[in-house]
Figure 1 (cartoon, rainbow, N blue to C red):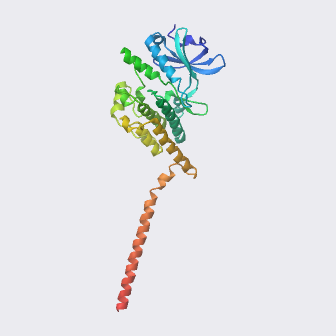
Figure 2 (tube, rainbow, N blue to C red; figure 1 turned 90 degrees about the vertical axis):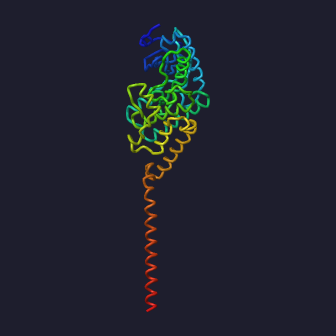
Amino acid sequence: MTNDPNDLLGRQLGPYSIERLVGQGGFAWVFAGTRTTDGLPVALKVLKPRFGGDEQFEGRFRNESQIASQLHHPHIVRILEVGSTGGFTFFSMDYYPDSLTTLLRRGVLDPDALTRIAIQVADGLAFAHEAGVIHRDIKVDNILLTADGSAVISDFGIARAVSGYATATGVDMTIGTPQYISPEQAQGRTLDGRTDLYSLGVTLYRAATGQPPFQSADWFELARMHVEDRPTPPTTHRPDLNPRLERVILKCLAKHPDDRYPSAAALVDELRAIADRDRRTSSFGMPARTSRVAQPAAPSRGRRHSWLALLAAILLVALIAAAVVLLGG
């Protein structure tokens, strides 16, 4: 057993060869590897020894991973196998070299890409929530990208495993990611699928503006901000952002779950309506916001017509008055 992930490089873990370390968190390492039976590229999430040796943590990890493996959806990462071998507990999944994190290093997303990825992630969440599974840790790092740029959600069930372990043992463990945590999660309240919508709102805010809505080096201060502070409107940082998309983001970021979308499915419907409207506008060869900018001109035309009608009425009255005077004379 080793505490250095590099010691696993080149080794075999079940039917998988471990090739390189691609990431790590508080309780697991993530490796890129290959399934030796058919050469399929895979990602392997391997519990660190201190957790793999804890029967209660390992049991929760395996159980939640098994539940997540039943989520078969185009926008949820496919878990291939959950197992233990050589003293290590792991699960294997499809490998994606890119994530939303790497994409955002090149800059903020253009409106079409932002809306498309938002729809795909919300659609994956809607499917999971319908199956009774809450993610609890939606963030840019957990949104992976396929070769054609489609979004897939990874790490379903992991935060729940950590949460259940911390509750059962009293061990102090950070659950969720401070920059993305929902107010109710920060307060330790009961969670439902709407906690994922808040975290998705943070993710979309960052994807649209290049920064999260709240920033602090102190975890407790970040938690307080999520619970108490109103986020700065995204258009403050990015004036060209579609106002309808801004309203979606801010609704997801509502402090109370009842003020957010009632479900991920409702969010998908709203996002698709925005995408459809933008496509219809673009089909006329105009930017999506052209019609919105042009709308204020309509009232001025109406006022001009009213003035012309009033002037014509005044002239008519004057002509009648002059005629009466002349005839009377």
